[in-house]
Image (cartoon, rainbow, N blue to C red; front, side):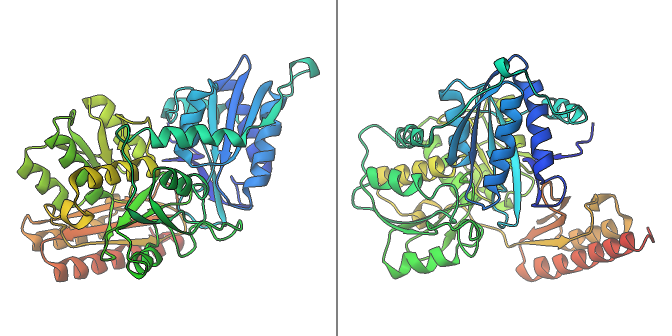
Length: 451
C-alpha cells in the first residue's frame, strides 16, 4: 500500500502546511499509541533544535498522555541517541522530532520500535489507518504521565565513547567539530573532548532558526576553511539530527560517505572483522564498487535510504553499509546510522594506523559525478516518462559502459534527483544538464495538464 504520510524517513514537510501541523501531530500520537502501545507503556521523545520542535513536542506529549502512554522528554539529542536510549530505558517506542538536513522551516516526526529500529512499512501503514479514528482520551485513572529526563543524555555520551577500542585516547588530535547548529551540539563536542581530543567547535550555537544554515554535513565549506585555518588534523561535520557525517582531511578536502565506507571496510577487512557484504545504494559512486572489487570485498546496492541499507544488511548478514550523504551503518556497534559513532570509528582507524584521512582513502578513485535536484510541484517517477528516458538512454550510450545514470523522486522533498557519473567529467556534466532539461519540461507539462 502506498503511504500517504510516511516517506523514507517518517513524516516530513513544511511547518504549518499539512501534514506538519499541531492537530496532525496530536492525531499521529494517538494513532501511534494505539498501534505501538495498545495497553499503555512508555515513549521517549527527542528532537533537534528547530523552533517548531517545541509545539510538536507539546502536541505529541498531549496525544500520548491522553492515550494512556507515559512520556519521557529528552530534549535535543541526535536521532541515533533517541534510538539507543529507547532501547536502554526499556521504552515501548521512541519518537524524534526532526527534519534532518532540511532547513528550519521544515520539520518531521519519525519513530523507533522498542529495539531502537525504524518501523517497517507494514507498521507505518497500520498507524496511517488509525489516523482516521478520533483522538483517544482515556479516563483520568488511565492517563499517562510526563517527565523530563534530559540529563540522561550522559548515558548516550558514554555509549558513543565505548564504541572505540577500550583505553584508546584521542589525545594529540586537533579536531574541528561542526554540529550544524543541530541536535548534536551538546553531546558531540563533549564526547570528543572527554576522549582527549583538542576540539574547535563550530555550528554549536543553535537559535532555533540556524540549523543546517551554511554549516554541517550539507555545507562543509566552513569546516574546510576552519580545519586549514587552525591547522587541525581532521574535521567532522554532522547534519541537523546527527545521523549523517562527512569529514575533512588536514588539507581541507571533503571526505564523503562513500570514502568513509571504503576506509572502514578496508580496515575491518584487513583485521578479519568484516562480516558479509558491504551495502551501498544506487547512488554510491562507481569508484567505490570498483575499489571493493579490486580488494575482493563483496558489494551490494540497495535503494536510497538508510532503512533499505539496513534491511539489506540484515538480509545478507552484513554489518557495514552506508550512503554517499554520510549515513553510515556500523551494526557491530549500534542499531542505526549514527554520525558521531561513525566518526569515532574513523578516528579510531586513524589512531591505530597513524595515518591521515587522505592516505587512508587514497585507494578509492572517485568517478566524476553530478547530482542535480529539480524542484517540482509534485513528485513523479522520472523513469516512467518517455521523454526523460529517451534523453537518459542517449546520454548513457555516450559512456560506452563506463558510466551510470540514476533518476528518482526524493522520498522526503518535492524533488526529482538526477545523478550522472562516468569516466569523463565533461560528458557527465553535459549529460546531467540534458536530462535535467528533460525533467523540467515534463514537470512543466504536468503542471499545465498537458501530460
